[in-house]
Amino acid sequence: MSNSLIWTFLHSQLHQTLRDRQLLPKSQRLLVAVSGGQDSLCLLKLLLDLQPKWGWELGVVYCDHRWRSDSSANGDYIAHLAQSWQLPFYRRVATEIPNSEATARQWRYQVLAEIAEEHHYPVIVTGHTKSDRAETLLYNLIRGSGSDGLQALTWQRSLQCRDVACNVSTLQPNLTASIQLVRPLLEISREQTGQFCQEHHLKIWVDSTNDDLHYARNRIRQELLPYLQTHFNPKVESHLAQTAELLRAEVDYLDSLTETLFQQIVVFEKESQKPLKINRLILRQTHEALQRRVSRKILQQVLSTTPNFEQIEKLNALISAPNRSQTDPFPGGVIALVDGEWIVFTLRSKET
Ligand SMILES: Nc1ncnc2c1ncn2[C@@H]1O[C@H](COP(=O)(O)OP(=O)(O)OP(=O)(O)O)[C@@H](O)[C@H]1O
Image (cartoon, rainbow, N blue to C red; front, side, top):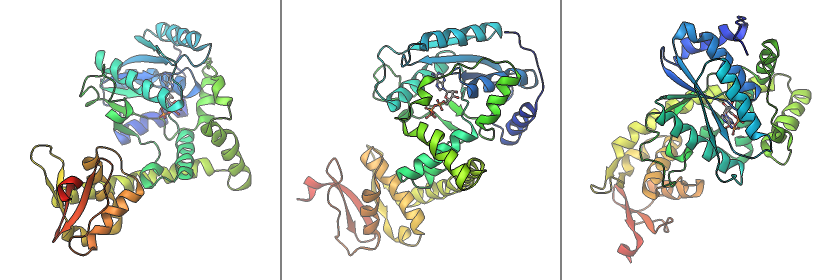
């Protein structure tokens, strides 16, 4: 397929977004994650067309989950596309077919990170759109997420261990430390990417699993959002995406306050570098929103896992509880107890 250039509104919009948000530095090596669907094909073509202005070195990666009988042909199609655009192409095929969406995602991010590391791409770019953002916000709202989940897909973030199955022994530690995941299409809707592919005669590889209404994601996309559009607000998708964007900035701000407070109140255990005790007098003077966030961060480090709402509330109750009050044990046997101005973490066995 030749790379004829028709400059469109989306080219200008993406160029402007990249400048305003400084998402993709000039001359960077970018690994573009392409599934063959309309969003990632649109992304790839846009980046290719903008490439002379920005001087990037682009590479294309496809992860074959082996979920569909045509997944290999799907990969061949992307390989062919990359070749005709003279771009390096990388493909990884799952040795075991993932048994759930979550496992497939985890495997995919692991593979993306490994290939990026191996071929020296500090940035992975994906085709998530404004529509994905609206759907993710709804999905997370229904599941009961706090504001962190409702910011729904941020413009960029580091690929963390939680994305890439840290327990997989083949994964080197620090593998993902410096790899950024960037989603530059968050202001562009799925309708626009579809139209773009049509205008540029880009053949879309249709993913038959997108029609499977067993998946909550697909029901939100195909049933809930159209219903909301028809019966509540035709612009619901844009409004939800805007809400996610507002929350992103607010979460960012709260995160920075949380970090400052965390550094002020936590005393660390020398050997493990885990929180040993926290100053509850300082904590008592802060807003409950910050108390919750800092408690969550502390528990995350103490328990080495993400704490749930009840566990955070249990710790927060100690902020103004009488001296010698304590929690019942958290998983792993750690308890928190009040000692004057401090809340101390200790193993239950030491106390009994
Ligand atoms: N099999 C794949 N190979 C390479 N990239 C992919 C693949 N599937 C998805 N992607 C990338 O991820 C983007 C989002 O895809 P999709 O919405 O299907 O994934 P998701 O699982 O809903 O998202 P997330 O991984 O963030 O949860 C695509 O635009 C593409 O850039």
